[in-house]
Amino acid sequence: MFAADDSIVAIATPHGRGGIGIVRLSGPSSLEIAGAILEHRHSLRARYATYTRVRASRDRSAIDEVVATYFPAPHSYTGEHVVEISAHGSPVVLGAIVRSAIAAGARLAAPGEFTLRAFLNGKRDLVQAEAVADLIAAATPLQARVAFDQLEGTLTSRIAEVDAQLFDLVARLEASLDFPDEGYHFIEPGETARRIANVVEQLDRLLAGARRGRLIREGAVVVVTGRPNVGKSSIFNLLLGTERAIVTEIAGTTRDLVSEQVDLDGLAVTLVDTAGCRDTGDLVEREGVTRATRARDAADVLLVVLDCSERATPEDERLLADTANRRRLVVANKSDLPARLEMSCVSGDPPITISHQPIAVSARTGAGLDALRGAIVSELTGSESLRDTAAISNTRHIALLEQARGNLARAQRAATQGETPEEFLLADLQAARAHLDEIVGTRTTDDLLQHIFERFCVGK
Image (cartoon, rainbow, N blue to C red):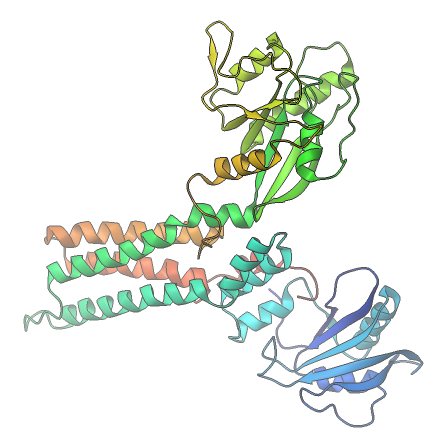
């Protein structure tokens, strides 16, 4: 784990050039280190933006004009003394400031170390710390909204409510065990079973939105597939709203996977265009077809594109048969041309039935685009509304909640039967509380913390 008793420094803004870049210092010596590299003669005033210059710590040559702001502990992001230096956003300038701070006694921060210190100093719990990384990584407004809700403590407060009920129940059961000879019972078995069942219901409500939450947080992969020249790349470009994939009348133009992310109704979808599915003697195209097959296996939803201006070919029939048991949408492209494709059934041996009515689209005119976008979102989400944001979206949180629910379900069955000693009930209840504590970080290991925070960017 990282040492938490020294002062650290890092660039807190993204790589590249910009109008402003920020260098952040945090730790017990932050104010002294800032004083060693700033031209300002007096100590920085708390929470007051000070215009000054920053100088190299060795030869005192001027590096840049800056604005420095001091946040004294504990009223800072990390809970330590923090100094933020806003300079011109040149990587050369910002790097020079960092080197000057290191020469004055700071250490270069590791990825996520500022947020880790905020967690260790009680400024954030583990759920909120992870939400910081999710908020930074958000690619859609809906992802940002879910992350910000968790940063505000939505999930933390709901877990705290559940834990408070379990704590009271555990206290009553332990009190009953403390006076076995006197026959005191601070809670009856029936009441115990009822209260455990109530907690299980609360966890079920949290977990009910888990699939929606994961979908919002992690996004989905949609693969466009079909035989050559049915308009796969045109559909791909239409959904993106840009000419990302090359489109020609030559069969087999696409020979490799082409992927791009698009926002569909707030859902981050990675679209993948693939090589046309057909038997070919061309070595390069054959490799493209192999990669297309692998991509189909990894897709959350397939868009099987057919040419509605032509009758189904053996390649169409084979592809429909191969994807019959997959989540898919059949797209009938070229709807602006006279239709010759049978829309309800494609011949085969046995006949291949299309369960959903194909979505008629014209990549040339854009007709049917809204219907296709809506169908993709519906296929990914089912009946769930993405606008109702989920309180839980992190796989780690979901797994721990499911484990806690399993402990409580076992305790509920035992309490309902009324024959299980209270010691066994307590063991399951304490195990459930331990899982809840692990979510928010009350109980955790150094290895887990390092795994979580090393995914952060440097400077956060």
